[in-house]
Length: 133
Image (cartoon, rainbow, N blue to C red; front, side):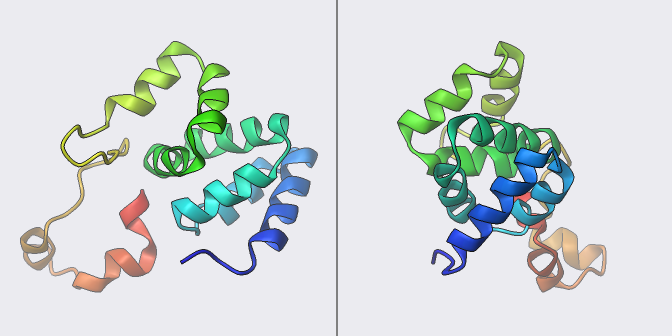
């Protein structure tokens, strides 16, 4: 379900990216669902959209890929056209053909059995938002 605060967040992210406060913009985007990130990116002017996506791509490859897939073909192609072939390859390399999902740079997601073996509560990963990292 999309956030109702998206216009406010879009304006905040726009201002942060325009000022070069990329880490602050990332901290906002990193807490959101990919569809909400796509909505914010869609609201940004083209040059700021590219900068915001670059920031997300550098810090969270999985979330960047998920947001890109939610952005739509036209805007997504525009962002990809500005990336180097290596960056595009890195972004698309993790795509799982069967599920259409992206894997991140870090270790693979922990299965339920692995969480129990490591004594980590099942809900902890979802609480921390690690499912997009």
